[in-house]
Length: 314
Image (tube, rainbow, N blue to C red):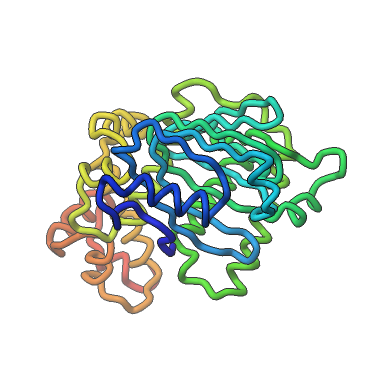
């Protein structure tokens, strides 16, 4: 994804002013009030999929308001969908409040007034969806203004996983493929909103499950890094090392065990494909820095050496 803006390019005292200028005057016309301006951090990364824009955003705690004054400038005629994987945001529109977190997403419309209340630092995917094209996917009486989405199961979970895949792999695709996937994503989201997903998750356990999947997706995207440490994972995902260990209790493995197990699974799949790449090269591509260590762990997990999997007919 392309970096649109990051406060890392500025000195600490300049960061909040730079953020307000970039967001309020360039990205979308809104008013921003940070809780701790002197400690502000934020970035925006962006990828386009036809008419759909996918952004990866870090926000420090703040309030964002879009009023009739901003809407009159006609800068955005779209829906926003936020899919959070760290932190919490309340979305307020038409006197309805949608609480958004790692288990619940929220859709809202840029052509009507809204307020966003960020609680703590927030890391999330944002989708910018063209309003007219998205509205065509609904019966007239069911065109949404704002709505919550359950991201822990069913179509909501599939859509969230799809967004994560697009963020990780989209840069490898050509323009036509990205445009096609953008249309498919709008179809999927419309179907999600039209379907009955049951009660939205409220329990902390549901939030932790969704948070764990988000962290696991991040790990897979960085699995080739031989220096991938638990400290690095926690910092990149905006959580403490203690909370990282707490999340992985749900997987019946420690975080370290899950990483090595996933590396072995990915290596097994690549070796079994028999695409001509050497076993050592495959191991190194998935974060191992010793072929002997890889072979030992592989045999321990699968009961055979890697070369046996590579043989024709296995």
